[in-house]
Length: 249
Image (tube, rainbow, N blue to C red):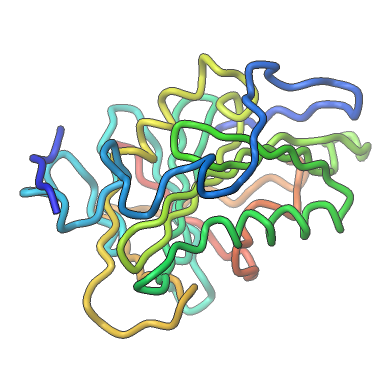
């Protein structure tokens, strides 16, 4: 295993059924030939063992160390038991939700997860496009949402995945970065520079890797009732969305 030194969406767009998304999206399959093997992470995301100083320039969230970026907002989704279930990092008009899970020692699970996400979204009336991005196979989905005026629209979401040693990292991109190529670089940088701290304890495949509150976290304002809602805001393993904690870097 090589070693490297660590380095230092407010509003999500909805589109109507006939609106197209970024034509630059590269179509492809989700086979091993189309993506990267679990051990091929030369440009991240990282395992804690990959770096000499994994916490350098990053915010410690327990199972995830995320890059500290000026102006970035950190939102934590917590359960009723005050357990952190997922984190969302907001950069301007774009956001990426990160969740890390345990995986088998001998094989990655992103290919299977892609299939499961695609099936679930299609069952609920969404449209899924498969492609190959900078991290290998990925999905871009258009999912039904309720608009503030009570009408129906479509929201574009982009699903990223990376297999690591005994872990899997999923990124759910929303906002401008999901529809505009020029806006995607910032959230791709966040995904690439994230470090997964798997730990040595035994975990069943797909168990969430525990997260924790960052320093100086403060309660977020509750979402407004007229904000567009979508059933696809979380759910590799579905759970009820709890209250949020927000920290601004």
